[in-house]
Image (cartoon, rainbow, N blue to C red):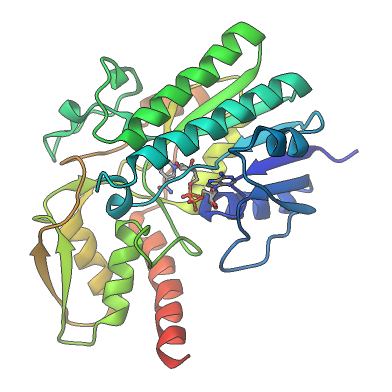
Length: 324
Ligand code: NAD
């Protein structure tokens, strides 16, 4: 019998890549989302369009004891979505409802292992004011003070998974992802994140032109390429370690330097203009000591390699659009 996996949020960026990987590994996969993947057809054995805010829909898709459940569905986006304040009620309500419904249905069916994707956005803002020395050690999460409602919902849901594990003996594994990027991620429309937005701007700008970068560009982040995110996700779910644990890169870079890296890869001469924009905390970097200790593994690929693949993919989309 093939092992079975359920991927919630399978129509999204990370879920789409995860389904492909689980299929390559020979699993039987059911994917669920509000929508199909935008950029390629899902190889899932079954792909169910369902709204996971609806308890009855969740019960219908969690109708058996899956060996592995990956819960990636959330109402989310980049800084232009989660920091404006305009989407706060939706973000909290929608994602919390999904997690409440999913956990309860998983409990009723006695599913095997459950993975939950939290985010580095749950770390306290006061530990991320110095762009050169952010503290994202897992134990620094409390006293809590995330800088967005998105982060607060992630924190609440982490605790929900831990509570179900404690009270019902469920096998939950929690990752805190740090800025995942790569081909087939949102690259336009307002929900895209910095690497995709900057790749798009560079792809759209002719030689000798100028791109806008939000903030003074000195804010720092680390970015993890999608393949390593998927590897870490599967390793964590199949381990004996519950987390929460960071899945991210330790290659911290300022946003202006990221823009310069992308411009350099494009081979064009492009200037950077720093403008007012949403930017979140001043600095953030993954701390990988715990994942290395718990899983004997940590991401190791250089940022530039992943950025090159992403730029190529976005450049093709931009030029397809221009000539469509
Ligand atoms: P994404 O937006 O591409 O995928 C999320 C998917 O959830 C979308 O396809 C969306 O349609 C689906 N969804 C939302 N509401 C739903 C509902 N009511 N019913 C069914 N499906 C619903 O985002 P992603 O980048 O693939 O992120 C996956 C998970 O990882 C999310 O939980 C996100 O918060 C978390 N995360 C991502 C990053 C990152 O950098 N991409 C960083 C930290 C955490």
